[in-house]
Length: 123
Image 1 (cartoon, helix red, strand yellow):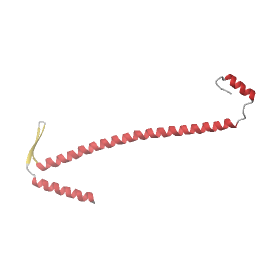
Image 2: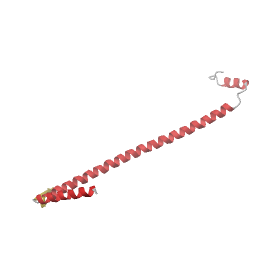
Image 3: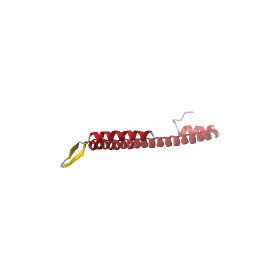
Image 4: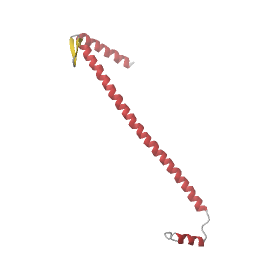
């Protein structure tokens, strides 16, 4: 309702402006000339062209922001997938670690053989 009221008031203002500015003017665009155009049409036309250009720039900025957000969302999704994969791998390694701890320890002679094969492992 408020938008309709504002549109009506704006229309009344343009109508009043149009009745006050009916002086004919000539508009030249390169080699072309538009003669006897009322001044209010020049002003209102300039206003509409400015609004149209502003709308195009707004749409361009809006699309740019959307593409930036989409790109960042893709990075976040990929990172979350990586974290989930790593958490799954950590869980698998913990299960394997527990399984290895539950095994019987090596007999002492086998342990000696392992130490001799790998000199970096100390008893």
